[in-house]
Amino acid sequence: MAAPSPGPREVLAPSPEAGHRATTSSSSHRGLLWRLRDKQSRLGLFEIGPGHELHQLTCMMQAGLWAATQVSMDHPPTGPPTEEDFSEVLIQVHEGFELGTLAGPAFARLRRSLGLAEEDYQAALGPGGPYLQFLSTSKSKASFFLSHDQRFFLKTQQRQEVQALLTHLPRYVQHLQRHPHSLLARLLGVHSLRVARGKKKYFIIMQSVFYPASRISERYDIKGCEVSRWVEPAPEGSPLVLVLKDLNFQGKTINLGPQRSWFLRQMELDTSFLRELNVLDYSLLMAFQHLHDDERGLGRSLIFRTARSLRGVQSPEEPGAQNRRLLPDAPNALHILDGPEQRYFLGVVDLATVYGLRKRLEHLWKTLRYPGRTFSTVSPARYARRLCQWVEAHTE
Image (cartoon, rainbow, N blue to C red; front, top):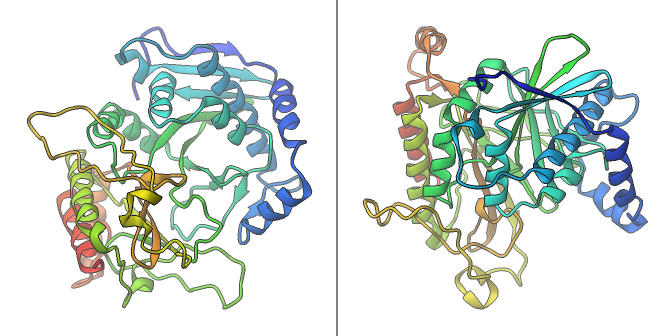
């Protein structure tokens, strides 16, 4: 993670109270009906309110992110992107903590390219409503949060993972420009947080693949292997939201109809890119939503769809490489595919694990411990090939 040569830029942040006043003003307009509907869609998630062990931490994140976004609103990047956009480190000093914004101009450009208004981003991540926590089935020690509207996903990261993400960021942005309909999760920000003079904690922000979540019935995290890939399902009738894994998906199929060929091709393009980065251990997130009777069959008709398609960098060497498709007129359209009977939310996440010495040793150890079984720690080339084979075998 290379800092610019003069070192991190340190500034006094705008008053967190200013952010609180701005977001409180908007939240005061919420009606009772809105709150009831919002609470119903949060079943299985937990509000991080006063008394929660993470309440103080998330309040700092909210105040810090409000101020960080204000910088990009007051000083939007102009002109062509530069190397400094990817290496800038801005440290904002708040009362009791510091928030660092890494590669802020690069991420501001990326958010703008997605059509995401900074005002909306600031309102969702600022102090206007409590973050939501969910119990992850991941074996990592990371903490996972959602913005109060469930549109954005926050995850704590290890320092070496952040270094890998920032090292790959220019190529990641280039890949999204070249393949604007990529299934890769949209990374929107990387930050550090230090309380008093304690150790820095790092976290990332990305668009939630599972958005809007109100009618989602099942969620899966797929790696294409079997070791440690089972989650005990929640009891029937339980409001708990669980993300299931590969072994839970046995006997099931993703029925995409005519969109299957697009999906297979895009998985091939995205996993080839991750293989080039020497990355592994990423997941294909999937969620199912049953279509209503009046929604079925609309996917093939232009009358009921917005004929829009993101355009990337023109590539004369690869005229068909962009793999464009018609996007549904829906929130988070890039990660939504409609089949004949169900809507599918699909995205590739966790892009920060590099196949270095530690992972090579882990591969050797798992080979000895699990002879004849498939596990996640394999070479990037094998990992990419295996996940694509899983997708081909489980789609129709």
